[in-house]
Length: 164
Image (cartoon, rainbow, N blue to C red; front, side):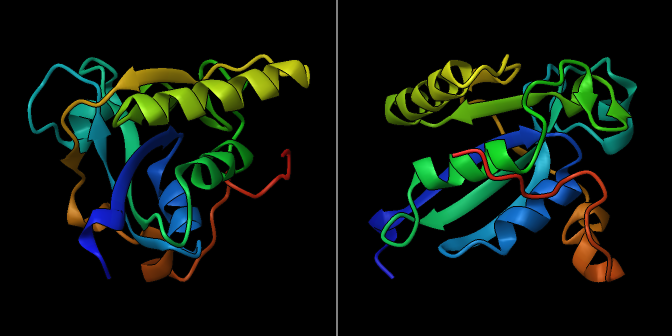
């Protein structure tokens, strides 16, 4: 594996357990790690994030091989596994930590994200997903990693709905 082809993408799409589960199974994805981004408190705990006062979102850091899968393909998956029109959370999970967002690593990721949002809007969707520049990613506690795999369950509020 050539390290210059290994890239990262950061997606917030509600509860990170289901997001992580969906990305881990995708061809070309090396890892998907649950964590927090966007808040004002360094090294937040799950309890602080859930309080809604820290400003963090539940985010998944996706490490992928761009020789196998593109950022565009991963971002299409992101939009297809959650309700990007919901403004107050995701499914039954209500709260600011569950909002939809992409934390872009560079201008190319921002451009691709904007183009996909434009396509969705042209299809009649009112997109609530926010685009944010990269900030510090804080890995969530161990008990959040690979949650569905460890508990032999499947996500309850993330399922694939083809849009593109």
